[in-house]
Amino acid sequence: MRATTTRRTVGLVAAGVIGLGGIAVAGPALAGAGMFAATRSAPAAPGPGSGYGHHGNGYGHGMGAGMGTGMGTGMGAGYGMGSGMGAGACPGAGVTAPQGTLTDRQKSTLAAMAQEEKLAHDLYLAFAGRYPLPVFDHIAAAEAHHLATVRALLARYGTDDPTAGRAAGTFSDPAVQATYDRLLARGSAGRAAALTVGQEVERTDIADLRRALTGLTAPDVTQAYQHLLRASERHLAAFTAWAGR
Image 1: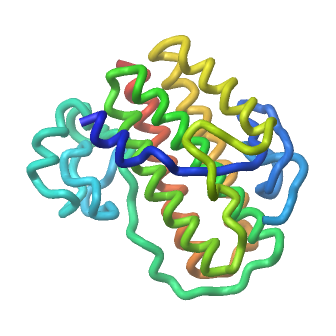
Image 2: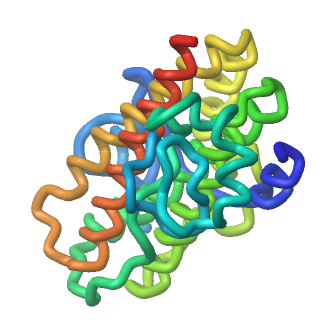
């Protein structure tokens, strides 16, 4: 299962400058601090009945249709940790709200979101190759869907995609690369360290998304950020649950 999921999610790309755990560096930035703080440049435990429909009903308590009962049955025990704990599968569906208007700053924030999803994806993918914990594979797959959503919005608003052309684990900006390498090194110290890094990434993502929603009026981007926020909350809960095992 890990090999299949990993192959499916390899190759997502990003660039920029990222800070985590109180470290802030330059790049296309979200407003305020967090994962994308400092200098700026222009551009689950799943609940019942929620889900994109690509995760299936075995990721914890169940997600409705998804990939069907076959995957739910096969993955529920190891991935879901029992009823309702799950591994952070994502709520919501594709963006269906109409297009609105974004300021230049909001476009930069949207570009930064792509970088944030890329960083999370690449870290979790790397950890999935080191530790026999399905939570990393499945949340990496979720981050792949998130990045696809953000990329579609970037195209819709005519904003450059800063994640284009970068392989997994590689970043064009030395500061981004240093941040990724630092977090990867921390998470490579052991299972517990990797889960801690996952929690930190998701906490920062949550804070950044909440800031990004402030003053936002575009219905489609608002809908996407709300989906991403709920997903990050589920990812955080999943990493926390696994850390407590």
